[in-house]
Length: 298
Image 1 (tube, one colour):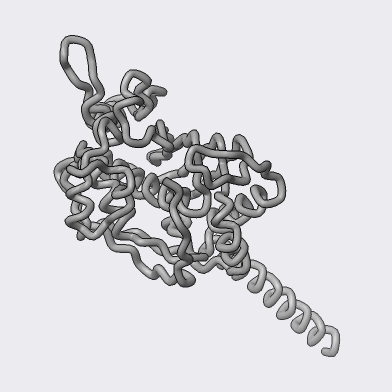
Image 2 (cartoon, rainbow, N blue to C red; image 1 turned 30 degrees about the vertical axis):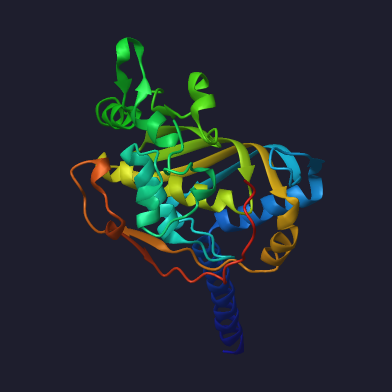
């Protein structure tokens, strides 16, 4: 009898250990490896980065060539170690997709992130929206890269040409700011849509969290339009840096523990990728740490 009691006690102990292990693993997934990977990237730049001058005159600590992979099934990658301005992320993406290169739409919706580069009329030149929607072609024609890539995904999902580029060498001088996130590629496998986007220049503290959320949202939208589930989001950065006037903010952020990721709920399926509205997106259970203010380098 005594032996049986010991067996039961040992089994209960083993069960409790297994439950704790699985619960910890589930919590790790909920918090998102992406959040930890982002903090690790900040630490990597602080430890390995070299001092470099830059266009803005601010100065940076920089590393070259980094990559991050995010499983979008784990949750939506809105940074949790500081609060992000969701309105800016969503409206900027809708603005890109509209093809507009004037900031009036953004201003009307309380978004000012492009104001520093706009001229007196609010124009930015041939920036993202123009390249995505009206890439110049011979004979005065234009190419709508967004429409084209969605049609390709629908009709030829295994193609290796699901690519959109904003880096138009012939029109760089017509842009208020050359594209930082200059290209993205979609990939379909097992009924899931993945996206990889490339950045030549990465403001890791201010810009990258916005970019990750923006391309995650775009992937969800395209997946819905093409009747696919979401897969991975892959980010690749060239010059990955922290501005010298962001160092104290970065150190503060590194003291914070990631929280569970929110979920994205798209409330309706519009007829096209261009018909989404801000109200169509619901971010559930986003409970981040407070925001951290920092100056933007212009």
